[in-house]
Length: 504
Ligand code: BES
Ligand code: MN
Ligand code: ZN
Image (cartoon, rainbow, N blue to C red):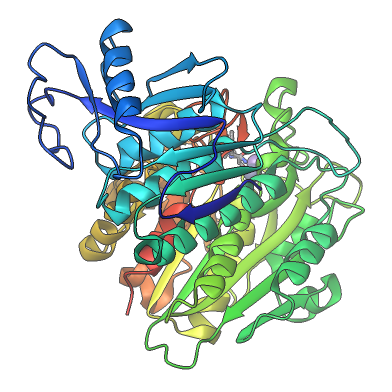
């Protein structure tokens, strides 16, 4: 991962990056960090005021270039100027928009792409820039420069190795940079796990990655249940869904227990390492990307590792049921009745509705054994998420307005997207079964809501402390877009870390 180095003054650079912003901010946008300067009237964009360490003639030159290229300063706009035989040899102007964190995040992403083939660049920030701006910039740089590479796949193309950030007072930004770097590192870890092909990514392999990442961290422990333990303890959903695969299922329990914690949060993530749909097999186009069906587990585990790395003072127990949903002679059948942890039974009318079966066990276990203050699950649960909200927005469900509000606020600040959806009471009756307590895949109602209503049945007396996010849609990006890169997005890591930092 690209290194971020904070310095007081820019010095000895090949490529210098200077932020620019609209001279006349759009009405309704946030005010820029500093108001427009004298002489800005005719100009579409303005060069943000910089550290005195920056030569005055460079700022004047940049100002002239803004005019010559008619730059607007909108977030993410970039223009590269070559200055042969002079220092810096290249000048990159980047728009930060209204100067809010999101604009800086887009600017960071744009810089990472514009100078992807350079080895080191220097960014000179305006004097007294807001810490949130630096957080956005660093997250944008680190997330947009991500590329998935298999370990054995070598690639000699040069990539950006270091970004020097000149901020005047480096000590004042050390914490915010640490938070941004950890958040980005864990988001990249979740992307790596999710992008990994399922031929490598068995439940056991997934466990190994988490055990290795958690090793040696104080107050962080991992417990892993193997298939025989899952069967013996009654995790019927995980055992059934994992039963068709030659690679047995696992349940990961990752616990972060800092000494001073007051609140206990349980996170649960769907970890289907490949979803064929089982005997109710998916059509071929729907199969292509089903290695991503563990994106929820990757997000909650990576966020927990991030919380530990940052020392967040909140107790977290993270449960990741890991299983491969395959077609074989030992696969569970549509119409089977499964007994979940704690005793609730499900009639499994469609083996492609497997995510809710493994989550049901984990939620029931959390309620009975862990009694947390909050119970939050993330899952690539239904194709209906994208039908309702498109490719970039998760579907959030909760009966608790305060919890929903605080999580939605964290998601928005993190730069991710989710929308609250209803737990429509009239659809509960569709969960009825003649053979079991519940019908796992009703055919009437609305896909994402039914899945959420089904999960709610396993939340017991934590029903109003529970929140579910269906992140099927935003877990994957079809192309590069701002801080997202094509493939796994690591959706949820940034949002969870923001939210966990507010819990006390
Ligand atoms: N993993 C899928 C959901 C999914 C679909 C995620 C597309 C990402 C992209 C899930 O296990 C599934 O198959 N859900 C079914 C539920 C149905 C059988 C009730 C669906 O959405 O069709
Ligand atoms: Mn499925
Ligand atoms: Zn699935």
